[in-house]
Image 1 (cartoon, protein in one colour):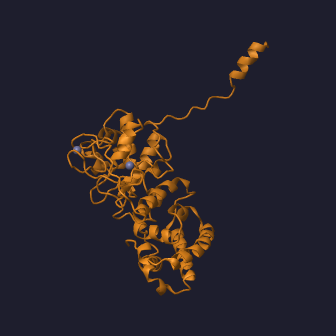
Image 2 (cartoon, protein in one colour):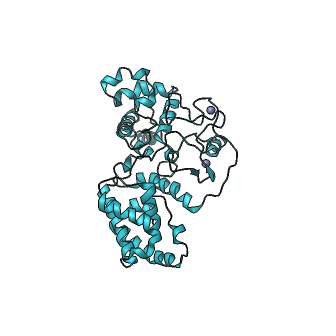
Image 3 (cartoon, rainbow, N blue to C red):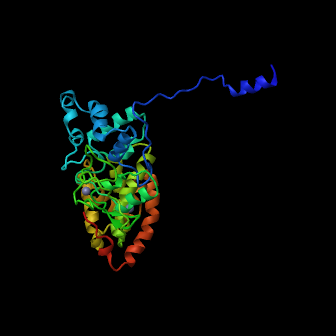
Length: 349
Ligand SMILES: [Zn+2]
Ligand SMILES: [Zn+2]
């Protein structure tokens, strides 16, 4: 064989080409997975509809609804609003949450797009561990400066999952309060609607972004909630398996034990810590089978124990034990030297 033919043989692999299976819908990559600004499921659905050049209502009613709702309801699904198809009511916002409909929608979307990372666009990872009641907003909230920045920098316009939480009131990047009413027509925005368009008002169709600088000072206590929820979102893909309630209770018991040892079994001397620790004891002793309140209990407890929400969920019991043994020595000194315990630990429970 001539040298020239050898070259062609090298280039032409004898191995059969591996052809990836085609997905029914475009396998659109979600934005920001593994970060605190992970895209929300509702935002992903809107972008998916855009990619297919159809309205959100058309995408849902013609490609998705028949796979997630029962036959009886299917017959009239084409005439219904997508909000009601998803069982997303004002009282029970479902789309980005932890309800069974969210799981059903994600399973369907993962089949249709052949992606396996869409569960991280919701809080399903923490289903059964974190209480979802009153956890999610009834209507959308957004940072007008984030939207404007995405537009100015020609980035993809999207909504982070973080904006779906009732207790997230600030954008820490722009140090401003989140908006929940259109700047132009003062209307609220549904979590998902037939005519949802990212960054635009459902009603007057105007742009919701703005360069207006509303910078305010956000005190440490107010930063803790968006930071903690952001860590919760960012940590989900890094977990080997979804956390379980018994494991989570074990970790809380370890923290409680660390406090009791540190305070020489006498919690009364630290009355200022009372509310949070009392809630911790009640949760462990009386409600070990109930999902936990993230904002009212887990975030404050983590803060008291000087561990991050990410560490709390990532570490196993022995890892937690090592961190706590180091933290509690320094924590005791910090508490002992503080003249204002009440202000340090005054969390809402
Ligand atoms: Zn912002
Ligand atoms: Zn408007």
